[in-house]
Image (tube, rainbow, N blue to C red):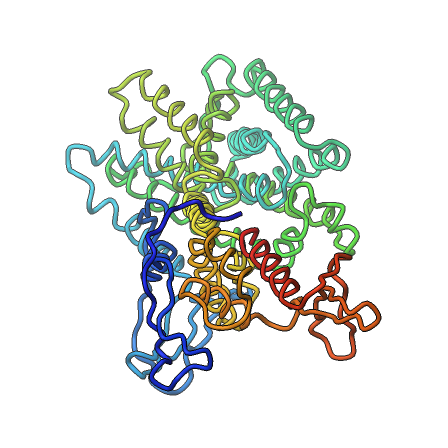
Length: 552
């Protein structure tokens, strides 16, 4: 309980001796007292290495014109604002300012603008290759945006996406050849075929879930592949079915045909992004925000019909996938059997996984990476598929939700590290811990607790057998500097649980009691021990306070 450090005795000069003391003690033999600033420096300095983690978020700030902050433009017909802007008052510049909280619409406009002017930026020696890859990118990005609506928003793990696209493409191509249908009918007819397929596939989704539904839809995709590859009506001998009407005139040069194909696929991508925004921004998307995976029971208890919302999204996206299949047939004048292959399904999953499931920007970025490796870097041979597999494996192992989940994952890791470092610096014993400090409104109380802890840390260095023996000899009166510092701290303690002596008149003895600190509440008896003299009681209180100090 006490320190065993040997200190050399010194003479302490009483600062009150100039006015005269009651006992006439101008000088008292004392112990060497350490400098309190040393304890202060030890408590205020960091006990662990401090590392810079992240940085402050950069905001675009411009002066406010003093009237309304922003004309709240919304994405029609949704309720989502184009830019999330709030006004604030800058205490440093003494001016009103505006900040953009969500800058994603700006990034979307920049990226779509780059895609739009892409053909003018391509190098001349790779113009045809990049235009062809861009057309394929636009179609597959549209497919994956619809697919991420099914897997992410609706939480239906369906692997029949390319089956819907392939069946619609084959059927519209066959009808165009047999009936001579023009190209502008094919996407509409494909949308109807996709809706019918979605209605058939949606029924098992009411009873099956997760892995079992994925196996069912994967089997359906394989069934469609076997049927179309073995049927003589759909070009089993030629590797696909071709001959449909197309909106790209054959009279154009190959470069012009590639350019028309590129921009038509870009228009399809814009239409698919609009569909994604309409579903997520309207009631269907907002309803399913309450029923994510493993929280369906909570949503159902709140009266949310999440099953109906999921089926509606599945039917809408199936019709959109059928439309894409008809568009695919009218653009490439037919379709190959590779649309049903397991390799295509795996590449589609890789596109979603790399970018992040549930995000339109994730589907587009993943498609861009995979298409660039698969269609542009053809010279790498089979190595490019190995690179795609490595990228997908790295995303699965180290990222929570693809590339666009890095920011949230990094912020969570940074907050975790901050909490660990704060918990290593903070200590119990009066000082508020980080989680307690956030709940305390009176910051003066926090500073008082921290200062009180520093005082106790310093006073613990003064406790030694010498001052205990000094107090035992003389509880009252003038004491040495070390003992006076300890006694001053004890006397300033609050009334709650403060010790005092209770005089027993019948036996003329004393007991130690503790005040409650509340008006009208009687003090409690601390121990049954009785002291014969008041000096012994004082010393008993002193020893009990020292015990509390050393245990704090």
